[in-house]
Image (cartoon, rainbow, N blue to C red; front, top):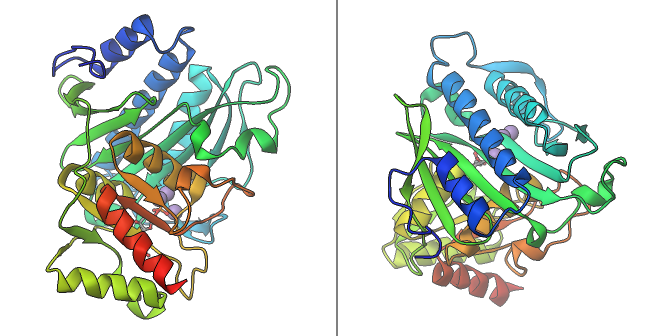
Length: 331
Ligand code: AHG
Ligand code: MN
Ligand code: MN
Ligand code: MN
């Protein structure tokens, strides 16, 4: 199997990355180092998340982020930890984050740009429910050594070099793609190592699960109301954690569709194109799934602002296509 390169379950992430670098992907080793830095940040955040109930790091931080959301202490901590790991790792010229209004400039002599949702699923932190981290990696388009520009950041998702997520769930997993399939690694806590557990992950083309916050039903467009009613007529199963990473991960493994439509309150939906949607869309497509805003492939949306939002439908291919049919009919 070309994707897993014949590496057995039990291979550590470090060895997996090294092997890929040697065989075909990352000639210079810079991207390999960057992926290792992200894994390290994930382990550090995992440690904080794991014992958050014991430390004074649950609850609100007392400020709002640029999204207008109340930041949780762990949102802020994860953002700091992540950016510090990327700064120390020395492969990144700039970071954009859900939690920072402006570009965070790191080493201008580096090639890579990272977009992050440091902690996804904030409302689940304090109640010991799965949360995550989402990341996208891009190559800058401006010359190395000079200042990073807005244009470097506002690239469509098709330009991602790699993307992934870390899920702090019943076990902690790192799932990523560099455009050659999707592989998943489970954190072995006693070793402190991510170990290959899911090779060449694929998403079933069909499924039984639909995931949407139906409490907002009266705020949906008629097309989405009709779609959710159709799901019920089909006898489908509703599952909604409220942590995008966890909802996406379950649906990718089991077959399902996740929906976050535009609502009366959130005209563009809630989820952020750069920090949440692009990374998961890249992974979904690599796994044989699909991601759209209802009329356009997520990866082809040209961003105009860092923090822009988009309606988001992602998961099993045939299920997402069904959503698109409903959206198109009412248009
Ligand atoms: P974040 O915690 O990074 O701000 O993201 C929250 C997102 C996402 O994780 C989740 O799917 C969605 O918000 C849930 O929103 P609702 O509570 O509106 O359903
Ligand atoms: Mn948030
Ligand atoms: Mn999020
Ligand atoms: Mn977040």
